[in-house]
Amino acid sequence: HPALSRRYVLCEVVSEDPRCRQCIEDRALGLAVRDAIARVHGDYGLACCSISFTGAGETGGPGGAGSLRVRSPVRVSPAVKYLNAYTGTVLLRCRKDSYRLLCSALPFVRYLESRAQRYPCFLNTLHVGGTIRTCQKFLIQYNRTQLLRLLQNCTNEEERQCIQKSLLSCSLTEEKSQSGDEEEDDGTE
Image 1 (cartoon, rainbow, N blue to C red):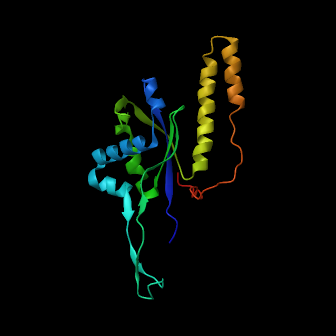
Image 2: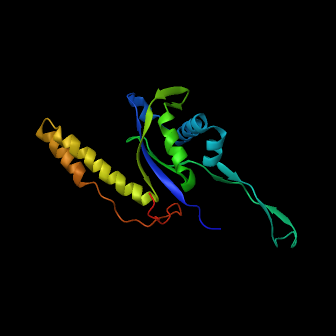
């Protein structure tokens, strides 16, 4: 079977309540995204974004040549691949053919629920990429731009030096990928 083509959607959680970011959990975020997809696109959109395959096939396994083996369900859905509660950065993974449904539903996430509390917020989509690495590169550039904006608004030399130090520390180091989550970028971002 060919590998499923995926898209990675980089978002930031924006909230006026400072407690919101501290209480973000990937499970709650995933549920909020799924609820938004269901509200906006109904059962069709939810099915496109959360497909479960349960297949059965013939194998030559221990039960003989004609035995039936039921494969475990494979869940392909908008998955929270990365979540940084301090910065509010979120990386969602979905199938390439349904990323537009996912992106169009993200503005309808209006709150996150955590520990029986509702925190009003919204998700700001920053970038859609074919690999985690392209999203990392974009995020570094985005953070640099944000730091430069802060640098322009500095009121004293101490703030200026602190932000300049942060700017110099923005880099992406080469590391071996430890998982098969990254796929080759096919140039259609």
